Length: 194
Ligand code: 5GP
Image (cartoon, rainbow, N blue to C red; front, side, top):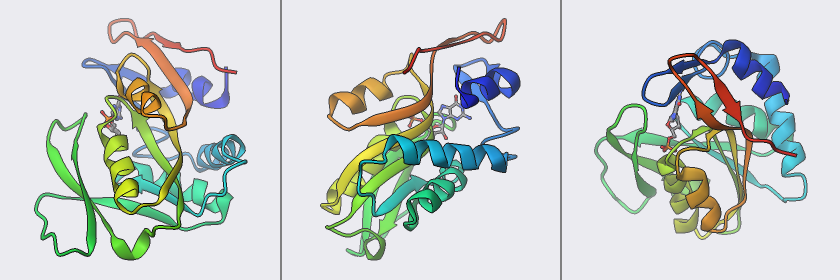
């Protein structure tokens, strides 16, 4: 079991509706030593890629992506969520449905901060049905930049997002993949990874 799986078993709480709460260490209160370890682990997993930018989505991806960007010594950009947009040609836009809030948002990135020649590592806290990740991928594609990979902290492998994005041909590295979880007895089963 790796450091993240151990922490999920210790402090993660399985909620009804296939939601894992990790707000005591990942996406409300943040354990900074753990963030540093996550940053180093993504650097190790994508060491052969010439990453020039880290891209994530607000809000809970930001803290994690900052530590990853520090390891690669590149800037981090986060896509902003907005209800209304004026498409004035200065923004890349994608529509994303939120798994946790069940609403749709436009997510935007200014064209100033993502260019054609960039090699992008996309980072997010969770991968469930893959809407957030596919939105970020489409933004990188709109910029004619290259998606070098996707780094996910917790993938819920029983939902279809991971399979869909891998089938599209993008490399996805998840630090923990949950194959099953049960809100009644609190059990979590991880997929074996090498
Ligand atoms: P997706 O777009 O892949 O369906 O969902 C990904 C987004 O939903 C993540 O950015 C994350 O914020 C949120 N999310 C999905 N599943 C969970 C979960 O089990 N727990 C928490 N805390 N957030 C989740």
